[in-house]
Length: 462
Image (cartoon, rainbow, N blue to C red; front, side, top):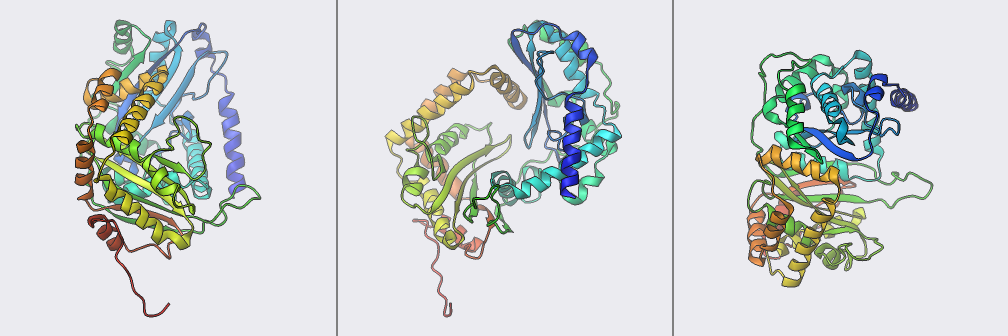
């Protein structure tokens, strides 16, 4: 069955990638200087999450958009999505701006959604779900699990991946219902970099204003405007991780733990201190080639990986949304050492609210500013930054403004936000052999203590 799905999927990709778009080729004749243009749509995805959202990234032809670069057209189109935003992007010569905006308008407002393409998408979703369960990298699955634990059955805690039993329920009616509710003008931003503003506005009026979408002009009736409610909790998935190797050399069997606490939204003033704190924690895998800028002096390297050779990974992540945020640490080790690994993590969380060395703080701020400026060297990244900021705040902070905010972070700011974070219930995600995983109540008690130690357990019989 799995081989049949793979064969069908590869045949579909081949036929789709090489299909001839004659009209588009005739229009796009000259592209030497590339510019970036795109449409951002904000949506919490609840409209389809209840059934399992269509994985548009898996089967882009379902929305009638080409994702691949083409030398003959000199055009690059792509689409991306997070838990609360969908992005359609095109990079092309600014002379073709009119055609590009027209193409984006067709993709966003007039997706074809034919029965054949939806069926191909169902197959792609099925394949990706099987691939997700066989991947040696557990980070995508753990990220979903930690959100599910932190925001139980609401907003960003809802599943991003489609449940297997809901694949057959994805049809044109379901998709049109979602698009009708969430693809509305008040949720959209058209952004461009390297183009004339007035020309972009003119194209937007030409192709986006007064256009009837494929799903009609009926009023949205089922829009979820709920605010994220942090609940805390634990999500566990027992799984045999001893056979995840992709080759003949076996991977070590590992248990993966992720512990998270609520931070803040990107609209709050504390967002910058939390970003600095996340950079200060840093971390990564137990093996690194070293070198400048690799974060080898972050706390999770110095206090965890350098001192505990049996730990394979310790990495900090910060997820931030319009109404909430989540700072979490992912670690992995042998299943027999899970309890000790969890205690090391809880101690590091407690130390976040302790003394902050001026040198490590300055290093974290410098590294964060360096990463920010390096990312903004790329025009597609600038365009994405413009679109996301305007979509969320109706304005954009320039790089020098963000750098000024980063420089203003003081040690007391780090201690303050960390102390506030530790007052919340933890969210815990666990994957693998969980026979030695401490009870959730013990993890919560450790994060409420002064030293981060787990409560001692005594057994009469072993």
